[in-house]
Image 1 (cartoon, rainbow, N blue to C red):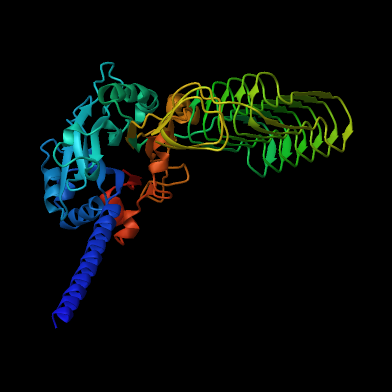
Image 2 (cartoon, rainbow, N blue to C red):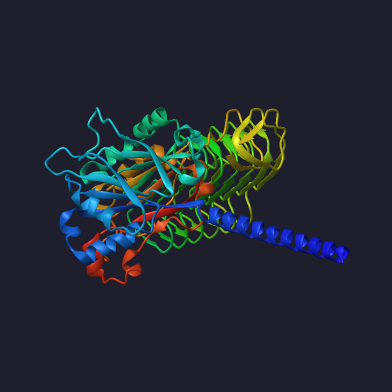
Amino acid sequence: MPERDAVRATDMEVTICRLLVVIVVLVTTTVSQANNERRYLRIGAFNAKTFGRTKMSNPQNRDYFRQIVERYDVLLIQEVRDSSQRSVRRLRDILTLPFDFVISQPLGRSSYKEQYAFFYRKDRVIIFDQSQYADNQDVFEREPFSILMAAMWSCTDNDEMSHGTSDRLVLTGFHSTPRDATAEIGHLRDVLDNLRRQFGVQTVVMGDLNASLCSCTQTVVMGDLNASQCSCTQTVVMGDLNASLCSCTQTIVMGDLNASLCSCTQTVVMGDLNASLCSCTQTVVTGDLNASLCSCTQTVVMGDLNASLCSCTQTVVTGDLNASLCSCTQTIVMGDLNASLCSCTQTVVTGDLNASLCSCTQTVVMGDLNASLCSCTQTVVTGDLNASLCSCTQTVVTGDLNASLCSCTQTVVTGDLNASLCSCTQTVVTGDLNASLCSCTQTVVMGDLNADCRYSDNDDRVRAGDYLTTSTNYTWLIGDDIDTTTSNTTHCAYDRIIIPSALTTQVVSGSATAFHFGDYLQLSAAQALMISDHFPVEMILAM
């Protein structure tokens, strides 16, 4: 009997141990799942159109605003028109989730004042500091307002303030004034530099910017343009772009253009581009252009490009161009390109061009290219060109990595790495890296930039936003194809989110968009317009 009792006791102990293991696993799994659910923050910016006591006095409006705010972990509200802050406090008090707010001082040169207000979830976000930009030159009507924040789970329980800066982020609200939008956007770089010195982290800019990218200048006297004219498509992840990216200038006196004229498609993952990338200049007097003229397609993964990449200059007096003229296709994985890559210069007086003229196709996997690669110069006075003229195909496979990759987690496909690898997240195929990459200190800009439609023309916007639009240090998350207005009669609003390019891997794919609260709340167009003429813009960020 004692033996049986001992066996039973042993069996019971085993059973209890198994139950404890199951409980521990279940608890661990539950905690892990809960932690995983809290790994992302939804961040948004909303121009609430004269938000104040009048709007908040309407019970239905109050409930609509409550539902909109509770969608976010952090929401920037612009156009707060209530210096007493009663409307803002009232909004906070009706929220069913633990929210608080940080608000700027009233801003504006005249009696008309606005404030920025950041609403944030106290159980998910910590606000360490705030900053009102000191505009000593009086450039901004409503000076950008910033907060230094971090996700609650990234900070220690006992000493939140001592936590490292790598998990912190600056959010900057910016609502430009319409009449000075161009000048204000042009000075955002000063704001970002100031915040970097102040907090040592990078910034996300959010707001209604109303600007556009890709510089295209055309003069068309007469012509039937049945397809894209100067189509520019770029994806820039990282890089210092100090000059035009896909700059297209054309003068067309007469012509039937049935296909793309100067179509530029580039994908730049990383590179220091100090000169024009795919610069196309054409003068077409008369001609039937049934195919692409100066079609440039490049994929640049990494490279220091100090000169023109696929520079195309053509003068076409008359001709039937039934195929590509100066078609340049390059894939560059890595290289230090100190001279022209696929430079094409042609003068065509008359001719039937039925095939490619100066077709350049290169694949550069790795290499130090110090001279021209596939330079094509032709003068065609008259002729029937039925086949390729100057076809260049190269494959270059050499190179090295001369400096340290820092503050990142990297996947390196090929390369000789002579220094240490350390912390962020990047995928590097190969490259000539002469300086540090990815500091893991980031900033985000948010606001209403007011630079679209009647406020400023395209050239002004390009010049004003040159730093933010051409520098691959920053990425614009909300595309020009996204309408951020509640009205069907205008698309002039330009609510945007601008982030450091190093943050792109932390943005959940497809999450950067406009939140159409009218559909969500099942409102009519008139009801939605009573809330605001802007939709919030938002992103989901892994923190």
